[in-house]
Image 1 (tube, rainbow, N blue to C red):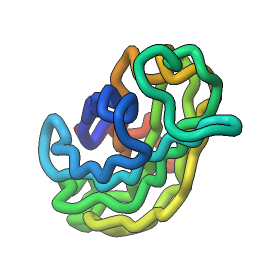
Image 2: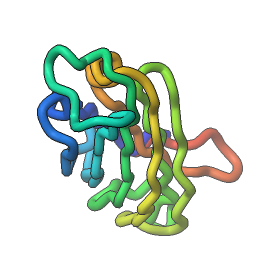
Image 3: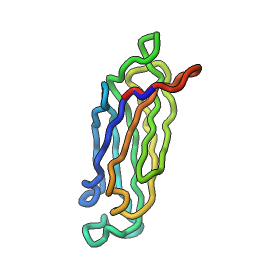
Length: 136
């Protein structure tokens, strides 16, 4: 089951290289991210350079205040990050409501394409027997 969903706008990356995000989940809790843009070659692109290719790096730092999904009052959270149809999945952190991941994921493309939609972060509870629970 989903423990929560957050939608993070990346439009700021058109003006700056880095963005620190504390995003509230749709149900309870929040996730912490560091998002950076790396251009291939030159300085960060500005308006006319939206076609400049590069990478967006998202460091999934941690989450806090997640809802308990298991009988022991904890959850086994992992996150799925989606941008431009490409997904990345974090490791599962067992028996906690405050997981720390410190995992970095990368999307490659043009700045215009990568910032044209929001980054979707959904946190799930890993279940061994039944379908995973969304914590959002």
